[in-house]
Image 1 (cartoon, rainbow, N blue to C red):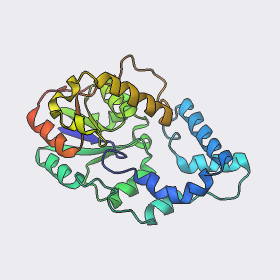
Image 2 (cartoon, rainbow, N blue to C red):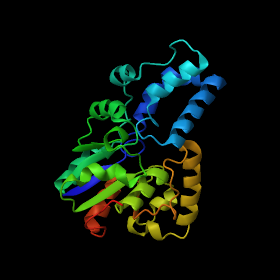
Image 3 (cartoon, helix red, strand yellow):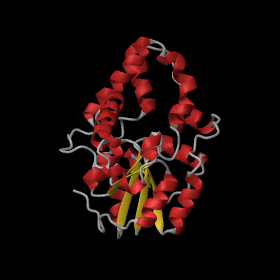
Image 4 (cartoon, rainbow, N blue to C red):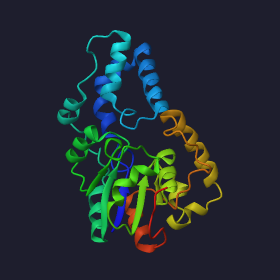
Amino acid sequence: MRWLTFDLDGTLADWPFRRLLRPHMEALLAEPTIRQALRAEYLRRLAQGDPTKVYDWGDIHRAVREQLGLPPVFPNIAQVLAEAELEPGVLYPDVPASLAAFRRQGYQIAVATNGLAKYQQVLIDRLNIAYDRLLAPDISQALKPDPAFWRPLFGGPVEQIVHVGDLLSQDIWGANAAGLRAVWIWRTMPQDWRETPVLERTRRPDLSKVITARLQGELEEHGRVGSAHPPTPPRPDHIVADLEELQAVLSSTSEGPATPSLP
């Protein structure tokens, strides 16, 4: 069995959880005390490392409300996700046709998100993303970049797993650690990179500089997920601007681990 696992936010869709919650959170985040308390609670959970609690925003809101003695000012996340209108274009336009093409090539599709399934499931379904498995912290009991995140796929015969994601610090580091074929999708790729043939991008002399800068930005924004410090920088096997380029990569290459294995 061949698997393609896709990150959700920034890979298949334009951060739908964030988009739907933003209108309900803007006034609260404008209050420095609340904003700082939310960030501190998130970082505290990140340091503790419980994969089911780091991104449980409903529980983070509860904890901050109790810490600050606030009335029930935070939105009902489940209700917002189920009922709020999704803006056109949240699902990237190349996704439906590309996922259908991958299926015709014999791949099984998994959505692999660090967001909790209890939040992301409804969004994936509302976006009509066709998939075979969902990987999430409350399913895998692990967060990317922990290789154990992909463990649920190893219950049967696995010929190959290719992971596609936009975050070097989670998706590419995680795929490297798990021995998977790692594809970095860079949807905001500059024009000069787009003009470089897709199979030659990992040989560009400025790749190391780009990875270093982007990795630093990701770690400043998201923090370091997981306690282990990977010994080497993230190493994408391929770099694509969209899923149409990924189709070309998968059609023209056959390298990659035949039998992935988890540490």
